[in-house]
Image (cartoon, rainbow, N blue to C red; front, side):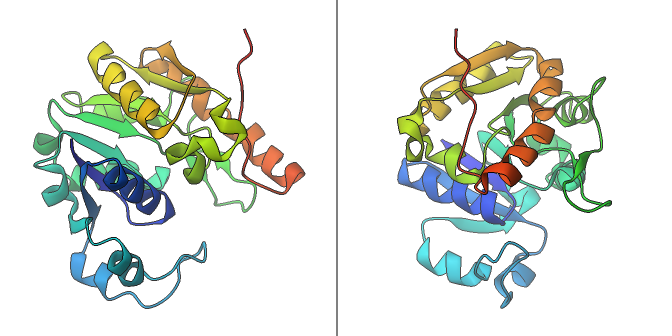
Length: 226
């Protein structure tokens, strides 16, 4: 597929690299191409400057959000949750119409420090907000309950013997995303239902964050035993 990955941070880079390994045509979306290619400092997570990463991943192209999304069959929202709506607006609503938008972001609010809280929960979700803002897009929430490395390469942990979830209103979009997740190596993909079920997976984050603190590693996941 032609896939646009919006966001050039750790998550976006992990997705772009894995997708190209699997033979997809990948474009990373950014707000300002020249500024992104001029970066010389590591980011807040300690990741190398983008030009260094790009030099090692020449199959991935870089474009503005709108130019990345326009030709794509599937758009991955790999942005910070607080910026997701604005980034998708920059990608242009017309450019998202009819396309699958795979939303892997979380509505984390870091304003009070660590651990972050959720800026939406219980009666709404970021996934729903994206679907309401872009009604012609086919939004699927998935993979937001694990770190970026396990999202794209689940066999790093317990040979992928754990669960992941999909939420969305469009059955065909969820099937396409499920096939993609299985190509990554996910073995137990649970369809929770419509996009309102994203409230549940987003609200996993408070316990996920505390498990990270207790275990001292983000390399863990949830398995639904049934």
